[in-house]
Amino acid sequence: MTRKPERPKDARVHELTVMRKERVSSSFVRVTFGGSAPDFDAGFVARGYDQWFRLFLPNGSGALGLPDGTGDGWYRRWLRIPASRRSVVRNYTIRATRRVGERWEVDADFVVHTGPSGVVDGVAASWALAAEPGDRLGFLDQGMLFAPEDAARAAAAGGRVWLLADETGVPGVEAILRALPDGVQVTCVLEVPHDDDRRELATGADLELRWVVRGDVHEQPGLGVLEVAEGLPFGREDYVYAVGEASMATTIRKVARGARLRKEHIDFCAYWRPVRRAA
Image (cartoon, rainbow, N blue to C red; front, side, top):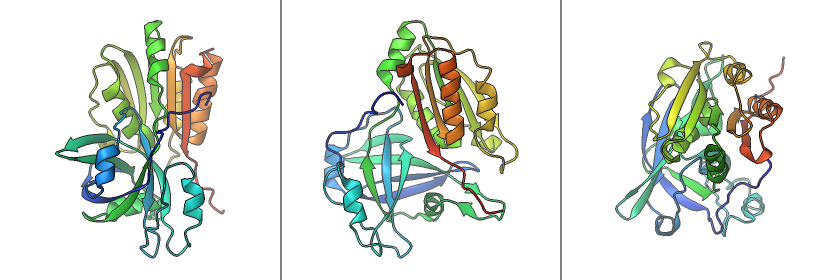
């Protein structure tokens, strides 16, 4: 990236609770949380777009040791928590937020990948599948990567906004589309494992949408997006946002740079990397 992502100035780690859970499709489980932290309800700022957060989960022993204080220095304080009590940390994007009375509710979609052995990949996905109302978690707001100002400048110059992602980026793209101003020219290329993972995407933007369904659920995610991206007509005034598997996101960045887009009009993030398995 060529700019610093927007970060909240006084975020803190909050202990929240699961309120409900829904199996959205073959690959997505939606968990809604909030509920029991007055300081969170009073201070949380819903930014929209691809607002993301640190998710703190109970460790293998069920302990949820959370770092105190502000977001600055949270990692050092987390490391000082004894391993027997220290929580597990993962990064996730908010799909949606809503104010219900005096409280905030936050929705996060978890991608469920099942390996060839039938075992669910990932601590967070396993947690989401087993989550029940009342389960505890930690939440630290981390701001957003998507740059609304850069996207607006691109649109004002006659450019197009491109949103490209594998399934891990779909919830964030969904939130971005809801937040974009009416009439912005947007093209989305989104890759998912199953046909039923496709979803309605609400937006006031002028949206051209292409879903890529892998078919082979064990094929590496992102290859379908890459195949499409290498033939896309990126223009010099466009804004490109690519997130998901590491090689997919970085390759799209190279393609966009080859089209001579401005550096500040390219935002990308490696959400995950394939696990190297022993032969």
